[in-house]
Image (tube, rainbow, N blue to C red; front, side, top):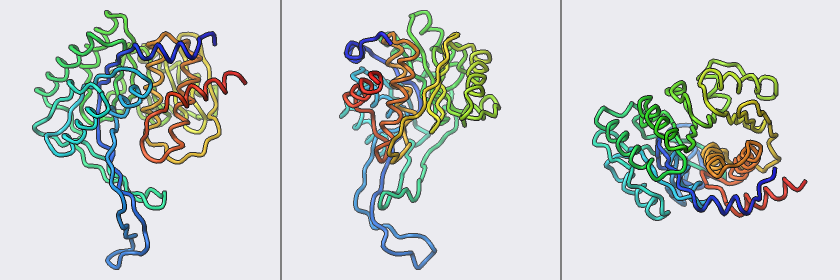
Length: 329
């Protein structure tokens, strides 16, 4: 790895990345359980703290901002209190929100996690995951193409909540290729086969099984390499970044293939790790990094955020320090 890490991390400050996808509010109710309900055999939580954080595509944008990257979001929210709160959070963080469209017909997606004593007890999802209607699709297309003009890369952050649709992907990928900028995707099942031609495709094992009906043994390098090759063949993408949970991560770009093992961590919460990985990988790709460095930094970043409870962005200084430590060994 010949890249100078300080120069790379400095270069990220000059990037602007467009994130298209499903934004959501990650809500947390934290408290203490001291008794079982007399109404049903369930714990009673006495609430001590409530909090709302940026989630989904908004968490990707937050990770990019933490890396020093300027970010624009293109997404749908509802005309409701959670939508207003989410917009305020974006404003507070300095994330571009001009591409956020308020829907007349759907609520803002909210995931509420109930946590007591560090134990995740329950998650409540408030959402409408039906596809955006024709009017909303038109607005999303127009907005995304407009924001693309000033972007150095594009991320499709797909949570199957209805924002992304095949025609949008096709138009943006074509426009990005003409502009000469990379496109990356964190896919889900609904649009899995729609991402033909992207620069970097980042599935996990579950997504690959659902999308291509491949039974992959994440502990087998042979299986992983065959799966990456299958994605390159079926989707005609430039590269694959395959996340393997506790087995680490692998990348294939052209004929280059490499796997990285997961580093030992005190895992507190895996929520949002995929958002961090696609953010770091895309910033590295846009900055012109080699595939092996993209793999190394993405793998490090995904592990680091798992040491914290809840969905949190990467810490740039900690990632840089960890990268120096690993690459010097």
